[in-house]
Image (cartoon, rainbow, N blue to C red; front, side, top):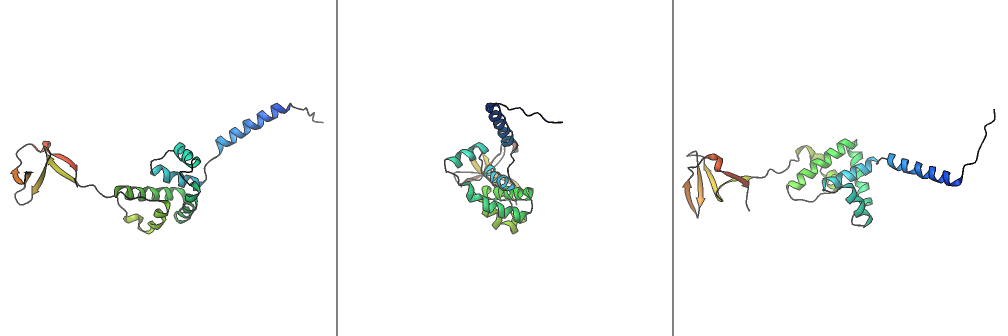
Length: 165
């Protein structure tokens, strides 16, 4: 049997090629290094669109983060372990008001189990005045204008706020 070959118009071929390229781009998945770098930026609060836009405007030098991401993937052994490490370091650094990079994750690799986010101290207030718990008397006291007053209201009236500095 002979196959009969027919010529297709060139415009049909170009359209088919374009359609295949669109399908290929949609199927294109991120490499593990790209996923690690993107996850780092996600922990910084950026979206994928913001990352792409900032990279085009040269606000982010994306290539600067690929080598540390590769090192982290080698160190972690898997993408999931690397993402968990990034999350731990991000929580730890953000709770202390510190900046961090992927290099920070590699540097803190041996300490990952001991890294804990800083617990925010909360202090008791009553109508905007600070309160103190006296352990010996087992009572709350309100400090107003330097004087201590015994707290006589219901404990539901106590406001718990982050410690003022």
